[in-house]
Length: 357
Image 1 (cartoon, one colour):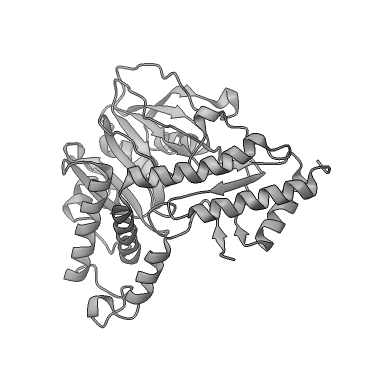
Image 2 (cartoon, rainbow, N blue to C red; image 1 turned 45 degrees about the vertical axis):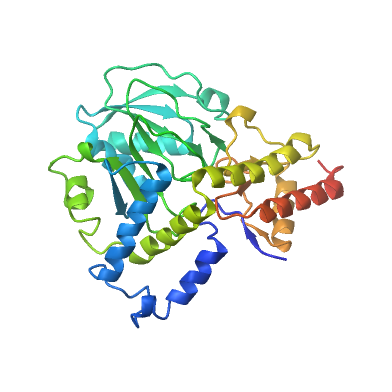
């Protein structure tokens, strides 16, 4: 039996990418140096980062009007860095969809930014996403978390607003097809759908990158001018991300991976919809493709499920500490066979434990 890793991140890599990495570890492109040793100032790496930029913009269906920054510090750093760079009036709006949206608000406020919550699903325990967002006229932009890993919710399409959007796409980066016609910034950590921990990607309209007095490592103008290499970038993480971008491109792009993600998530949701033991609290039109939360409603039974799942090579299904229960993350690299194995185990566990709850 294969081991399936359902972790919320760092997450699975495609098998072919891991095989390529194994081949490149001793000597990258015949250089005699490991891919983990190559200089970020070398032609070898210049080609990697240039290809990664091109592949990413092509997969997002964006033009070269956008700059791609390969950064460190996680998406959490960008909660403050983005408004500090582009919020000219220091006044932004936020759609409150859960934990990470609230964190984005808190970090922006620490940076001296006024943040208005213009829509929230908190009253519904974040079991859906806000459908009605009040129009605003005076905001620099609206911050939106497209997918919520903890709450298991996501936007199927982006809301149409008067203001430009800044999107935290950390947990469904290139996993769903969105139209970015009114988007200023797209950002997220790479460790879920695009690679390994240590890399954060920011895609930003070039006309928003202007001169400012921010410290250099927060300053988009300086970082863009230095091609994300003001200091030593996460070379290995960028290399890995480019391999994943190639893999996605060869599969047929975002539309194809979205179709596969729908097949995987529908398989699991179809089981949960008909289960007499497991429940999913999220409203159907707000359910995430990539993060499925569920529970038995019994803490001890949930713990038993997690232990027995691990014994069956279904790993990292424990839910986030804020909500408990279980969580299956079906990111891009998770094969359909993994979702099928999970459902088969869910069925078996339910038959064996139906009378306990």
